[in-house]
Each structure stands twice: as structure tokens, then as C-alpha cells.
Image (cartoon, rainbow, N blue to C red):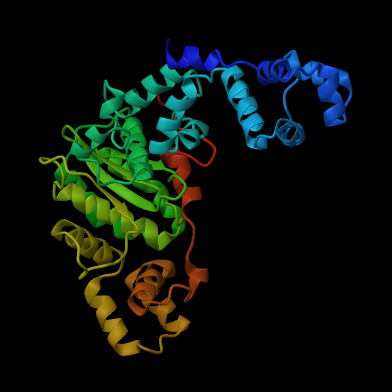
Length: 374
């Protein structure tokens, strides 16, 4: 007999009570008198039509001189044996949700809320694998994956960028055109509205560009990777600040220009991206940070300004400096905030850019999923 058969064969506690009454030569009326309850109540329990409550378990324990837990456990075992067998999908959904924010991915339109076999198939398709055991973070086999060091939220976001980016049609990538485009970027850094030109500029260079809202608990800024010979840049614009946008964009563009990850397929999701030029970072990250910082505010200009004005830098000084180098004040403030470790300083100059970027870019999030096939 299987474990399931043994569980479903558990008798009602009333059968034990009936046997005890017979052994003691008591009637149900006798037991009702002892317990001080109506005879009908005892009959309902003995006939299996009513369960044993905690109060009744205590009373029966005194009547039969046994522990009340004995009757409570009999009732618990019977209830568990009669409990409905749960949907097998519960455990399988728990496995998925333990590995990834599946419910949030469904809410965002990345997956469809459907029966568990179809949901698992969607997850495999989303992560580009034919086996659920090969989906990173779900199985121990994932430890062999190149993605094992990424947090699940980061990895899910990355694959959403990849899913959308792979469907974007652009011309053949041209490093020459991209290098020229990078030289043109500063002319768009004076006014927040000018970010609207970025998607078109990158498309003309053969760079697939997508904005995907980050997932809860993830602090992702951007990513650069390759699909064959086509680069894909994904950004979150989670801070929605003009300084952060231009720094992250130029950082990822430097990865593209240097071919980072093109041959070894290494993918670095940039989390909490900072203006860090000298920290303990891989050489490609230092190189990208340096290029990004210099594009936002020419390094020699910033060093000269800081040497002349620090530590008492006035708002008037910043505005005059920004006007001279033809940058929006928020871009200058962002680098000075990092330099002085004062992240609330002159925050009112941190203009938002997403509202100007969104109508001209492929955007996924903020209530509107990108139109891609699941």
C-alpha cells in the first residue's frame, strides 16, 4: 500500500471512541452524561458526522484518562487524510517564483498568466533554452552558466532587453558612423528635450537601443551586449535625470566602440553606475567611466574649475561654467555631486529626460509593455 493509500485510509476518531465504549461497556448515553453534553452530540462524533473540537478533545481526554492531544492528533490525521489533493501546479509555480519575480513579469506583460505547463514553456522561451533545468537560478545546473553571478532580477531584465532588441530592425552596424555620432553627442547636452534625437542617431549607426523599466529591488542602469555583429544597448532611466542619462549612455557606447563582450560573450549589467574612474573595477569599466565622464564634462575643464572654485562653489559659478562649456547645468552638478560626495547639492537642476525620450524610443514599462512576441 502506498503512502497516499495509507493516508486516505485513516479512520474517523469516532471509530476509536466506539471501540472504547464497547471495551468499557458504556453506551453513548453514558458518555454523554459523563461529558455533560446532549446524547445527539456524542452520536454525531461516533458516527463520523462531526469532528472533535479542541474543547471536546480536552473533555474526552478526562473521560478516557488519556492526553487530550491524543484525540486532537486523531482528528488532525483524519482531516489531513480527507484534505483535497492540491493542484500540482502550486509547487511548480513556487519553484518559478522562488527563482524569478514571475508575478511581476506577468504584470509587466513579459509573460502570460496561464496554466503551469504553458507558463514553464514561456519561461524557457524567455530565457532561450529548451529545458527548465537549464534556466539560470532555477536548477543547480545554472551554476555552470555565464549568468550565474547576476541577480535574478538583473538577469530577467537583461533577457527582456534581449527579447525586445532582437526584434528591432536597424541597418548594419558601423563603428565608423558610431564614432562620428559620439562626437556629435555634446551638441544635444544643452537642453533636456534634445535627448529625443538619440534613438534615431543610434539607429543610423546600427545600434539597437531600448529602454526597459527596471524590476523591483534591482538597481540597474544599463547594459551593452551583442547579437551576432549587432550591438544592443539597454537602459532603465530609473533615476530619470539628465546627468545620469548621458553618463550611462556614453558608458555603454564606449563598451560598443571597444567591442567589449563581442568575442567572449561576456555581459556586464551595469548596476549603480557611478562616475568612478579610479575604483576597484575591471579595466573595461574604468575605460567606459572615463569616456563617459569626459563626454559629460571635459575632464580638463572640470579639474580646472574645481581647482579654482572648491570648496566654496556657488550656484552662479556652476551656471556660468555650464554655459561656457555648453552643457546643461544638471550634467555639471551631477559630476560635482559625485566629486564632493554631496548628492543633495543643487538637485533642482537635475532635469528629467524620459518624457522627451519615450516618444522616440522603444520603451517597455511604466504601464506599457513593448509589442513583442512572447
